[in-house]
Amino acid sequence: LDVQNNLLEVLEKSPDGLDPETIRMLLYQLLKGLAYMHSLNMLHRDIKPENLLISDRKELKICDFGFARHSKRNSD
Image (cartoon, rainbow, N blue to C red; front, side):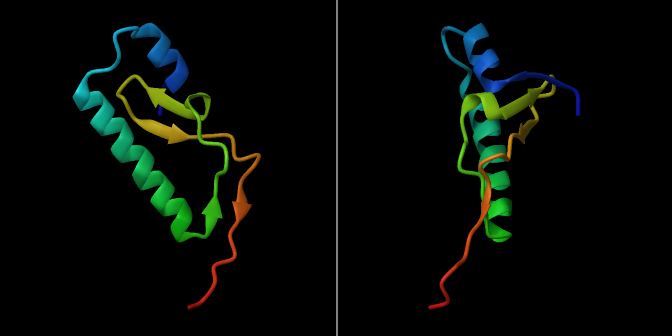
């Protein structure tokens, strides 16, 4: 993965916003990544544009797990 920028940098370069297809692609990848972490009972706890890395091919990676914690799920 060739990471070029974080999401904040991408947004700053696009003052008129991102096109809907790019938004859809990035949001899908973010939700898939969060769903995977949650399936492992892991909470990131610091999702923000600076912690979302974007490659030149618009691949999203979540970074900075400094505040991440393991979640204890209640069995109902």
